[in-house]
Image 1 (cartoon, rainbow, N blue to C red):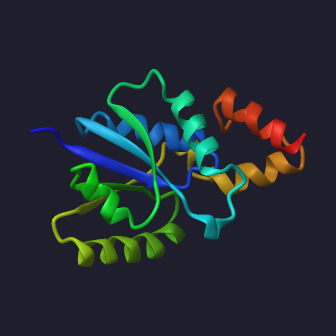
Image 2 (image 1 turned 180 degrees about the vertical axis):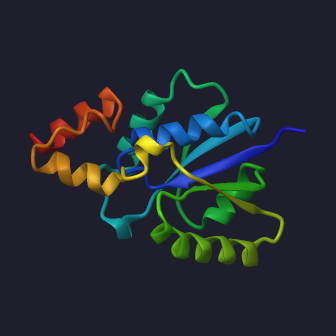
Length: 159
């Protein structure tokens, strides 16, 4: 039996912290799907196609990771790919309340799908896509926090 886990988010943009977590999860599950959410309420910097292309490029050599995009409820997507695990990253205690609410709602929507929380490697605990975008927007160097492909895409966006 193959165990598939879904690591979902907007990944706007995908950061080194996201990649680290995705790669680490391949040691626990047979297949990991990095699921990029179409969430227009977040007003993303990169559109869904761009975010998906960036993640695919960054993860092209990763074994057991597939990049897909989705819209609608995460739980519906998880069912559609025949997964039973949702992966979520917790950088700080402040993330926990919201993530706990999401996990509880998902459990109510489908009691057979479990949520697994993982913490980032210590060097990425403070890195968020929002912070990366803000620093890049004002000309700061974010090369330490994103793959070179993502770094180039950010430079093109912000000039």
